[in-house]
Length: 442
Image (cartoon, rainbow, N blue to C red):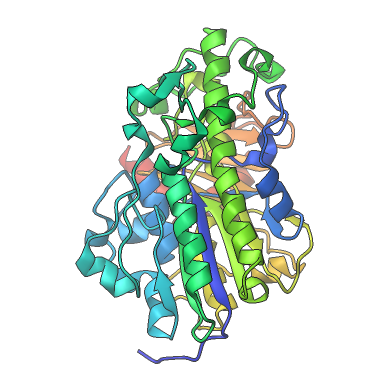
């Protein structure tokens, strides 16, 4: 492998777990979602409002954006914990950074699960030691209380217990790392937050930020939003939104968990901006996928609709500290190519991802379809439309500009259906999934 001289720019990748595209949820439930740190970061960064996960499940999504390989290129299309059986660590783009002079540092759930990666794989990708952070669901009853809602809504009873939380430990580790770096070697640092992953345990003050009885279901939900027969059979409903008080408390739990993770993001951000690395560190913030928050009788992931597929994605370049919103569709698979671009290294080989740096510098993306894939089911976003084809050959077609909750399937008689169907097939082929063959087999 040819070794290149990196640009000297540090890279920090910060990930949330199960975070919705928060800008869509600021007031959609009648009570403001509070993410002050994400908001202030967006005020000096590029926010991609039409960013999409390539897999609506944790491990396939993370394997995709950490390798630049689409789900059907790697074979990771469903939940699978041992991702390195499918993708060797040498094929992850952080390995290329390390081989080209970067000091790589892990810190939380970015590459795969919450525990550290096993030593023999960790040492290939990273330059420092693995780090272990306690997971939130082990908070004992003696120091916690329940606020109700789906999965209980547990909270610690005193701020004295903040140190028990995964995100406190992840942020503290990142802060210590920033203080220790002397600037003689460019670094790549990961910060993987637990939140807002369930069961949404937080310090009590984050539950107290929201009044459950002030949450309101959107008018678009009406008498409920239909699922899809194929998806309902294979990835079932798990929530009853007609129990309105339970729904309100459940949304409070989720919002409080996102606000908690946002708080620790702010701690890392302040430490970075107070450090000697402030002007030389590119920051990328993302989530592996979104969540249904009660619509379609779901409080979960595992679908191809907008609320799971659309994710937060933010790129902060300290050389351009201005607010910029990009509405062109992009994918998490673009993270690796973007990192390589900012690092001054050659593009990733065999990746359909594209560098987002030109868009951060006020360019425009070509007219592009971006997919989300679950097994051999695939949905794409192109322009204002979302087109989904399931393994049984059935389809859904939505106008997101008019129908963000996707309550009305436009169907094959719509004048733009054929064009979107063709764009869907072409996109899937590019990403390694032959939907025409799948349909014929069905």
